[in-house]
Amino acid sequence: MEPITSVLMEVIFFSIPIGDMSIPFVLIWLILGALFFTVYMKFINVRGFKHAIEVVSGKYDNPDDSGEVSHFQALTAALSGTVGVGNIAGVAIAVSLGGPGATLWMIAAGLIGMSSKFVECTLGLKYRQKHEDGSVSGGPMYYLSNGLAKQGKTKLGKVLAVIFSIACIGGSFGGGNMVQINQATQQLIEVTGGESSMFFERGWIFGLIMALIVGAIIIGGIKSIAKVTDKVVPFMVAIYVVAAIVVIGMNISHIGWAFQQIIGGAFSPDAMYGGFVGVLVLGFKRAAFSNEAGIGSASIAHSAAKTDEPVSEGIVALLEPFIDTVVICTMTALVIIFADYGSFTQEEALLSASTGGTAAGIGLTSSAFAQSISWFPVVLSVAVILFALSTMISWSYYGIKAWSYLFGNSKMAITAYKVLFCLLVIVGAAISANQVFDFGDAMIFAMAFPNVLGLYFLSGEVRKDLADYFKRIKSGEIKAYK
Image (tube, rainbow, N blue to C red; front, side, top):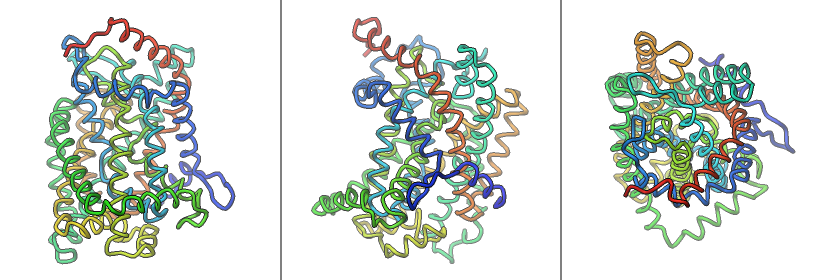
């Protein structure tokens, strides 16, 4: 995997020199896109927030609308694809490399990413395909090909759709599968005895168990996945958030100092890894990997929502980066800052994050929690396994939809993907973290290039649809059912 991963990293993370640092072009691509959509949609991330809460609570649910899952189930299915070990391991790596200041840029990326998520999920539902059995398929593959065809850009649309589908399949295998199981396995080994654990150097055993569970769930498609995620996601988020709140509460007298570290570190020219630009890059990179705004993946899950109003689902979707990044990632960072990197020194964490050692990722977050709640690493292991499980089953759905777009919707084609996905769960549990994270980053970020380009072309019709939607809400044409 190493030669392939190296080539992918060089191509996808092509960097532009700025001063003493260099910024990956894909991050500039995502940031500029998010800023453009925020301004062009008249700050929908702010003015649509209250309405998003109302829609996801079921206030506007019409039982006669087509689709497979409710607004809430679509949100949890998509959240389960983004709320994963990236919120725990990814944040730890960002804070290890960039110091506390990386947190501020994660928050900023989450806030503007809400607008990107709105645009892509609105289009995902608008251009979804309905099948004879009542199931639906949607996402960038469809709005890139069909949406651009309406503008006379048929060839461009097809090319972008194919590129996205290939990257999405790779992303489902890497960041949506092997990264998740790899970090969950590391945490399990840590709390079951380290080198004396039965899973030490036998991670494939845990991988096999998880592969069987994942396989059993994904057989039933999005309805089966949603039935699991709408229970597991709120539960696992509650476990993690409550524990973080407890730690923050125990250190509440230092909250001012913590935010001083975050704000000061974000603009410090002497920050740990590459100064100001380095910290900004790390914050945005980890946030983008965590909430996937602009990547296009979540629009695949939101396309299955029971609604005939694409804009309403886009508005529901903008809650994802807020929950995922602004809330959960910030809490993780605060716990690490309060614990002063737990049982590690800042230098050890920096070195380990640079080399893929145990003082980075899950290990650092677990150690930080243990400073305030000694027994929490065991609970964190359960949460991490649930995070990993929910992310894997959602990404399997994304991968299946991209796979079927390329190879057809036959039972044989879908079964081939599911078998391969489950085999890679076992592989991911056994190989090194560095290889897994690099491959996962490369494939998921590759999805951003065709997706954001398509969003630029299609953003005009989304803006018109948004204005019309709020006009009909105001007039009462779109009415509340509860």
